[in-house]
Structures are given as structure tokens and as C-alpha cells.
Image 1 (cartoon, rainbow, N blue to C red):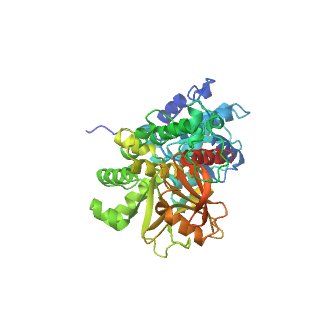
Image 2 (cartoon, one colour; image 1 turned 120 degrees about the horizontal axis):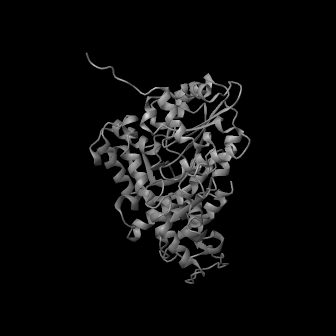
Image 3 (spheres, rainbow, N blue to C red; image 1 turned 90 degrees about the horizontal axis):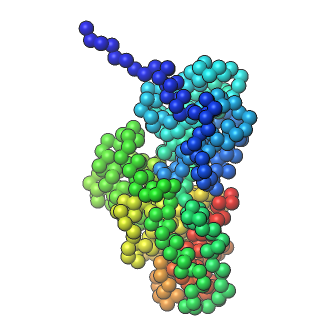
Length: 458
């Protein structure tokens, strides 16, 4: 007679949870001891404090940016208050044991085992929630079954748009340039050069800009993630884990090929047709793989507008940027070389700075018509009016070769751009006119630092 097949049961789940929740036994959680707190933590904690139990607070973002650390820091802050320690539970669904656990049943199990009555709040901090199939529905059932439960979760994948009604979703971006400097022990204000008052072309390089540019080149190659070599780790854990298979990716090798192509050409314009032809994939398959890479926060699409700053009725073309330029170096195992390649990575780095703001994420486009392209156009989403536009160059000869930024000049002729038209350079920093239109020339490193500092205060 064949032996019965055994499965993990509630005692096994509780035994594992005891190990993951040392504070139940009065032991301090050492995982977050002395780890730096990201500027974003204030926003995350405010969402937790405002929560009323009707929605779960979901923290999502790329691998390696510190989501788990931030989750454990929130646990620590809660425990430092008046919340009873046995009322706080951390569980990571990446642990294989918990693949057998229906998380909607977890509150009942914890209340029974920890002696928590149904009229007291129970805090559930769920890490790697996307390892559970249909996790959004499970959280919805959990909230409905126990009105006193408070759920804070971390997901490496963005939730589907149709499943967000019961979620307060926050996106944790890669490090901004300002945060990266702070991680290296450099105060951004100490290395931000003073803005010159030059209103004409000059070859003078402001004091301190050479040092800042060196730091900026380090940032675009290695500076977006929490751990050393975090870029390579982010790629590996997003593409080589079980997540692609759990979310409908049937051919990981084709997914990898698509990512390599996009990463190597970050900042380039694509269409579904050209990608499908290049990779010999069916268009529907390609769309699904591209959606996965976006949901895993490896890449981000920019939508296209025309010279009138209007979206196309049929969006055929789009730009794809890595979520942080350092992912390209993590992929190829070395620093970027070549002026054109570094220029595209600088563009990607500028895009990364806007990720800390939901407004920035929703309002950033690129303009393309005929042979002209403006890499970044920022629209007022209410009126559709362009507020500012950027053209990126990692060199300083645009003033002597105005044809290279003719698209920006033409765009400025058609629009007021109340916040300005900018040519992002390597070292030149002055005001002037091109084609009769006022332009601001500013080092890309300076602008990236300013954007990061501004959004870190939100």
C-alpha cells in the first residue's frame, strides 16, 4: 500500500513564522539595524499611518532598491510605538513553504495561535507577495474576511490596473542621483556648482563641475541600487527567478533576448512590428513579454507626441528606457563607452530622476515628427500644454552645431514652454538663443541632481 503524501500544515507555518518574527519572543530585529533610511520612507510611513484597513498598502518597484529593507524598517517603527509585538507579523512568500499557504487564512491562524481577539488590529507585513498566484484577489478576500487586519505588502511586480481598487500603491524608484551621492557619503549641496550668470557662450567650466561629472558617470554605471553589484542582481532575480513562469511567460530565453535588445539600446524608439521581426516572435507574445518587463520595473515605455504635443491616434512607435541606466552595465559587466552610448544613458538617467514623482511618471513624453525628435517633453496632464522640453548631449558643441538641436528649436517656436527649453550638455552652462529662440544650456549632471533634490522633498 502506497504511503500517504504529506503536506505542510499550520504547525509548520507557525514554526517558520516564529523564526521570521523574533520580536514575538522579545528579540530585536537585527536586519535593519544601522541601515540607512531612504528619503521615500516618510511617504511610505505616511501611507501606512493613514490606512484604515479598507485597502492594503502596496510597495512596488525594481529588485534591489530596498523594498524589503523599507518594509522591515516600517515593522521596526511600528514596534517602537505602542503596538503589541504579537500583533505584528512579517511573512515572506518567497519562502517555498508558504507557497502552500492561502494568505487569506493567515489572520485566523495568527489570532488563534497568538491569542489576539477579533476586535484588535492585526498587522500583516507580506514580503514578495507576487510569488502567490492571483495575489491581488487573495488580499481582497483577506481584507473582507477580517476588517481589523492591516496589510502592508511588497511586490516585485506592479499590480494589474483592474486589481488596484483595494490597494494603495506606492512605487519605490531606483536611487536618484542625489540619493546615490548620499549613499556614498557625499552631501549633494557640497558638490552642486553655483549657477553662473553667463548669458553668452563661454568655454569656461564652472568650479566643481569636473568632480560632479565624474560622480555622475559613476551613477549612470552603478548607482541605482541598494547593494554592490545590485544592477546584475536585479536582472538575475527578475528574469531567472520563478516569477516569469508564475506570470505566464512560457519561454524565458525569448524574454531574456528581448531584455538584452532593449537594454543594449536603451533610449531608442521601437515598434511592436520591428521588435517582432528582429526577435522572430509573434506580436501578441512580444506584447506579453514587454508588459512583463514593464511590470517587473526593468524597462519603461515613453509615449510619443507630435510637434503639436498631441498624442497619435494610433500609437505605433514608443521609446523604451531602462528603469535605471546602470542595468546596462550590470548586463554587459562593464562601464559604458562611446559618446553616443553614454548620451543615451544620460537620457535614461534623466528619465530615472522623474520616477520619484507620480506626476513626473505620468507627464513625461517624447516628441517625434518627420526626422525631428525632442527626447523629453513634460506635459501638463490637465491641459495637455507642454511645460518644458529637454534635448540631451554628452558634449558641448551644440552651440556651434545648432542643427543637432533643430528639433528643440522648432518645438520651442511652436510652444511657449513656460518652464524653458534646455539643451543638456557635459559642461557648458549658460543662456542664449538658437534660431531666435531662448535656450538654456545646462550640464546634465546638474539638472539630474536638481530634479532628485526637488522630488526627495515631496
